[in-house]
Image 1 (cartoon, rainbow, N blue to C red):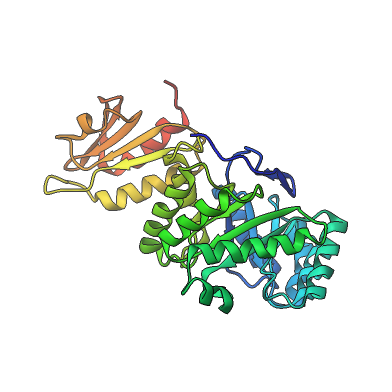
Image 2: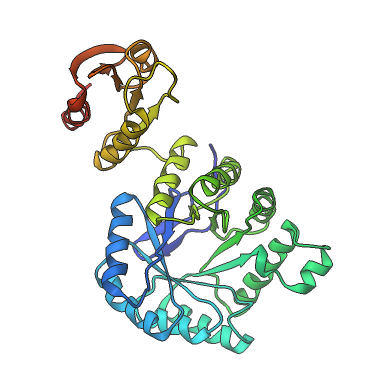
Length: 351
């Protein structure tokens, strides 16, 4: 699909916008002041496919911790700031590759200018973030409620404020927990700015509801060529955010690589613990750098046929399992060896 062209912005050693691949972001849920815990989580997220990481900076101690965190990670680090402009300045002084602020709550115009001056001096991008929940009262009154038009006006007002301070190294983020409002807002803003857009559905919810809302919202937005970075916001382990984001991008044809796992929904013919097996397979293949499809089927009756579109598959029987390649039974193994045999085949994969 064709993508809407935006400016290229350098964040650490990565470049977003300008037609570059869409990058995946997540956010730590550790206390940023706890350097070992934060670094450990970032490394796990990096291994899972996270391209850019954001950390909350609610205190000066957290801002100063960024220095040591930055030394121990390999992906760009974004500092998330609210309310206190001094935290934004300190975060940039201590290694942040980008800062995320809402100019509406960072303080006075003078405070914002102080932040912009440091960002300009160090050439650090600023992500201007506006959420529907923080929309200004005058815009709520103007549009008779919280609307996509109001969100866009709020964001562009803040962007123009920073541009008037002679700085345009910016990324824009406009989010709402209302999926269709969020989609409409992105459609509106995409035609009114060339700044890169970070896309996500904010406060999407738990693993199930959050994934559904994010998949629909991000799918509708990304399919129109809008978006340069994404985050799937979930109430849960950040690793789930990265897994979901990778799958959304791959499903839309915006990212290649990584094993795709498909599995049948189970039925009365299922003769193995398919639910557990499918989850084990999904976790097992996460570290295998192949771009193929793996099918996990619940019975030997329909398994080979249903797995025909996959490169390799497994199907369970009573105490035994089948390894299937391109729809043909390749090997029969004891059920308890099925997972290990599949991993062996994948690690030694050849067409």
